[in-house]
Image (cartoon, rainbow, N blue to C red; front, top):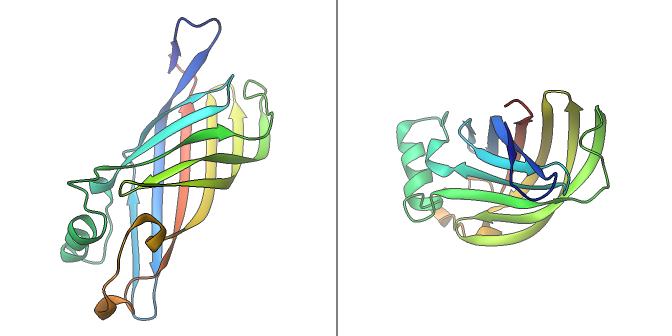
Length: 172
């Protein structure tokens, strides 16, 4: 969706579709979950962005109890309902020109109230309908204050793999 902010020719693209997933591969267990409920905006002129991921919307765990532990014990989703990533695309790419680009996004990744600066490699596909961004990166749980009790350390990886596939739409 194109939204004029009343600041010259600045235009925001709204997040139309999202898929955020994580994978924890530990010696005794693999845990995977996905989330399709993110919201966000991309300023194509300034190459800035902000994405919010509602933590409680992750689905696909091995069991309902595992999902409950994820929300209550590890991510504490009632106290920290959203994970966020906001920042800027480093490379001077014109997001109005169709094409495929390899870029880096530099910004602040905030999980469980702990913000860390990150530089994330991304693939962008710019088309007349919008900007699709895909990326994958690792997140060390302890960097965001997520503590894994010793009793389950063989079941939960200390570093999880995150994949993101989002589409920012130019459609009104």
